[in-house]
Image (tube, rainbow, N blue to C red; front, side, top):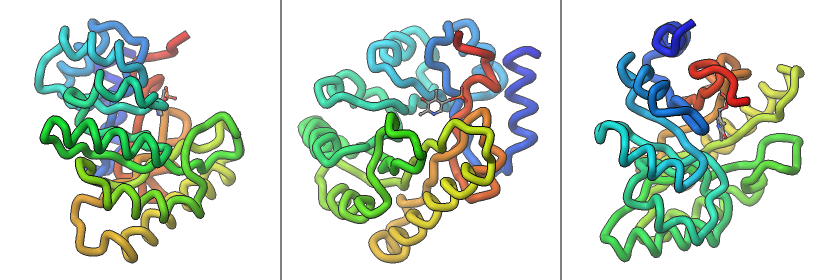
Length: 219
Ligand SMILES: *Cc1c(COP(=O)(O)O)cnc(C)c1O
């Protein structure tokens, strides 16, 4: 299957209200352009230098999403180029993004990352820390909180994965009703990857981040 076909097939599986971010980390420009030519405009990367290089070489109407753990000393590299940072995973990072954005007269869109998996390698706030993080982010100049993000456990146990997605959705709904009821920008639940996006969509995802299913294996 070609990248173009993969995109077309994937779109058929997604409700029109769910945004598809094509995760293009490690993928060459030629493959990204195949997706672009199939109409794809949202792409996700997790390394600042790679993102910047691709942004310089590829069409300017691409919206770049930052997905990986972001070190505070790398914020400067991507702050002008990314449309949405999915991985705000510490108060310090949120504060520093706000500071860099404010310096430039920008307001940066972020999602607050919740640690929903049972693996301890993945970044993010615990479910109980999410409220404090959301309040902090809401009060930070230069930041606009657009929702939440999470990565489920890498497992075949789909009931576990479903439960993790459901937990993220519950966090979203709680924050929405308590802190962001009047804030239309707070609208996104970024969850679902190649192996689990159908479940994520069933559980209320509004943004899926899909790499392998589009571009093939990275290894
Ligand atoms: C790599 C990555 C993805 C895409 O994973 P696939 O399994 O290739 O679809 C999604 N989200 C994040 C945060 C990633 O790092």
